Length: 328
Image 1 (tube, rainbow, N blue to C red):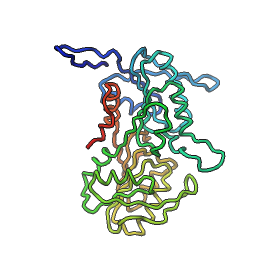
Image 2: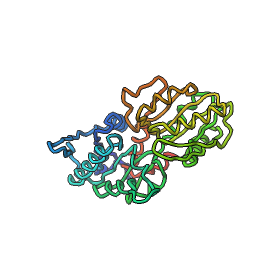
Image 3: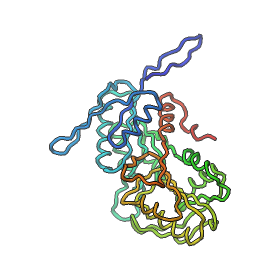
Image 4: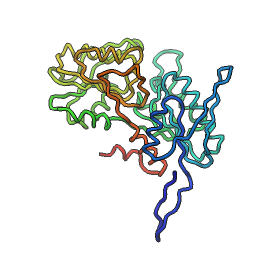
């Protein structure tokens, strides 16, 4: 793929740097959809496992002086897919890629963003350093767990969100009696943005986390009684936070609940546990992470973020503004 740009006096000049898109094994379906949106081929990648369990990665297309994009969300098995991505980066650098951009729709280590106990690692920063050391010149990601994770990278980061895609879905409903609620104050800013897109009020829960799967929401800030509620979170893993919030919303007498998130991880049967709650009418996520067939549920709706990622890739390749994607 190449782009032609107009030049004074007629004719055009050919952009020398061509695009090459590769995918790891984490989410090839999303990569194929992105390439379909771009109108380019998804280049083949060979991943081989040796007898000693080490991986070898080969990018099976020319990379020399090309604009290379490596698509790989960091999802379970996280360490496997992370090492695979690091090897892909090293292979692209060794093949003389002109520039290598990591397209990482989900960054699992973004949750490890601070030192909240003695003698623990800040994994989000360490993994960012590993990606840059392996050869990443740029990172394209979506809905980081904490905004400060953006600053862990020493290369440019384009940080997208899926609020427009989620808002487009919910605009199909009657929102005259709707309130958006964030499970905690840390996610209140995106929830407020989402509420503005829908033209509805916003509320938030006061959450305290004691362990990975044990949280308490002591109160709800905002009016939700008798209202239709949209719960917005960045990701749902075990679903403990959402279930705790649902209990508080039930006590406040909400009329109905729809649950929305960007990253639908749904570990340990979370999707079923949330879907079994009688007040929950729908669970909405995007395809930043693969949703496996065994996770399929009648209440689940999966939205595609491939068009947004494809447009961001096109803009990065052409040197255009990515932030302009969020301009009203």
